[in-house]
Amino acid sequence: MATHVKRTFKYRFYPTDAQAAELSRTFGCVRKVYNMALAARTEAWARQERVNYNQTSAMLTAWKKTEELAYLNDVSSVPLQQGLRHLQAAFAHFFAKRAKYPRFKVKKKSRASAEYTSSAFRYRDGSLTLVKMTDLLNIVWSRPLPDGASPSMVTVSRDGAGRWFVSLLCEDARVKPLAATDTAVGIDVGLDHLLTLSTGEKIANPRHERRDRERLAKAQRELSRKAKGDGANRRKAWAKVAKIHARIADRRRDVLHKLTTRLVRENQTLVIEDLTVRTMVKNRSLARAISDAAWSQFRSMLEYKAGWYGREVVAVDRFFPSSKLCSHCGTLQPEMPLNVRTWTCDSCGTAHDRDVNAAKNLLAAGLAVSVCGAGVRPQRRTPGGQSAVKQKTPRREP
Image (cartoon, rainbow, N blue to C red; front, side, top):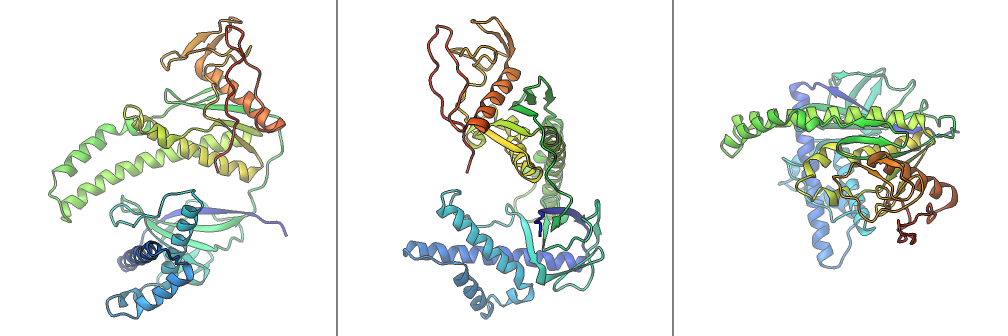
């Protein structure tokens, strides 16, 4: 039996007052259990002991029997158990050195969500009911689920702007590998232009945050004037700021989805640069623009869609001199300041657009890696005829 791609379909819904209260209680209980389990595991770690998921699950059972935490019985146990599983996964990533030590969840900063497995919800004919609730969720079905889809997981969440969402994890038989092609493209990300392709095409940077910067600054000033605490006026001001941020994020996500889908459909091999965005945003003068460009989100979308449709994404090492290398003759320029956007090769006289040249070099390096294996590089020389310094081999992030 062929296995299908599992996809998450996210929809907005409008809960009744009773549903909103029940879900808010559930979010709080999930956060409480997660933090208590993290504290228990941290204390055990200090004693050089390890606590696993089964032990935290037994702790949860004991907590429910206490008078102080008896309210945990008022919500579904499934989201609480799922919270413990997420904590176990966080520790697994930590021990594998893929992530930092898990942090405690804070009400105002952590994502408010609850995850329900198949035993805790009922989906029939486009209607969804969660355990502990009798009424159906009022979901806006903005797009249909795949024919015959049977959700295996449901996640309910509320964002900072107060909007409610439900995500359904389903198998999608419609997602199949596309017909193989011989097309390949190098992609250079930037700030003046969001993307520059090796074909010479440049895709403008929408600068979503800049378009709403004045509105955002005004809302933040109003928030700063409100008295600290949990007053109604401060909550309203906070909601205004959150709505602007949500609007920016929605527009950015929409643009990136359209771009990545188009690139994956048109090309068999996509070559990008392995940038360390977390390090780059430490530059205070560029941090805001880099964050707005969302290079990490672009790469993430590109990689999972390539996996869906049978395409290949190659990440070229960040130390590869894509901007300083002549894509025509292979000459390596000694210096290439950021303010130089066009330059002429000293050896062959070819005039280059900095970004297009970089995209072409990324494509050449990526194809060499894809065909011949890591470590293969186009031959290049300095203007004086000396061989260029050997660069690190391209690699994918773990």
